[in-house]
Length: 255
Image (cartoon, rainbow, N blue to C red; front, side, top):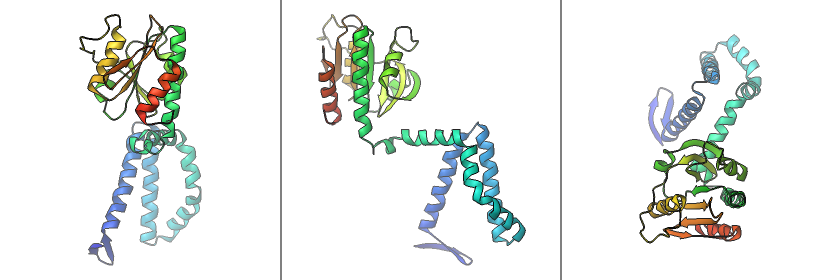
């Protein structure tokens, strides 16, 4: 579909979309690399790219010959120069919510790691509060904590809730397959019927389940019991197997 014509060249809707996508990719790369030495090198490479394009358009034969000779090694040079930044870009893409929708298998692994961590914490007598986000956004809760943004693993969760860790107070928030933040503050439940013997962790877990659809795993420091708060209900004294089955049910995963 042609929109307008510039001399011998026609511009269509697909051409505008193509240009917009390329511009967005360069902008996204620059925002990730901004403030690093790679940003300066990226500008230099863009300058060379523009220079080569201009040289070919105006038929500068010598410059075009030089660019043609070096462009075969550009990809290798790019990978070597930008190896750390490329890793960052791939990590950002992998953590994107739209991308993470396509690998539900990662959720099963997350549930396994959370259950394993809860079991280990219970055996050691360490208290814990682990929030697993579902559909409701938890940005206000995440903002109260300290950013972590690391892949979920049982050793990571156990280390966070080790009493000597500066992050052990408060809750850990997990979104998809990423530990977003630690030391987060949760709203306390105001339910008058809650068991008075339950501590602050259980009240906080139940409180969040009352204002969101998140699932919150609680490990009691006093009794070593594992509990789960979800959908305004607090299940106390769960075995690891029962916890795994309940989480699988909540997230629509195989048990």
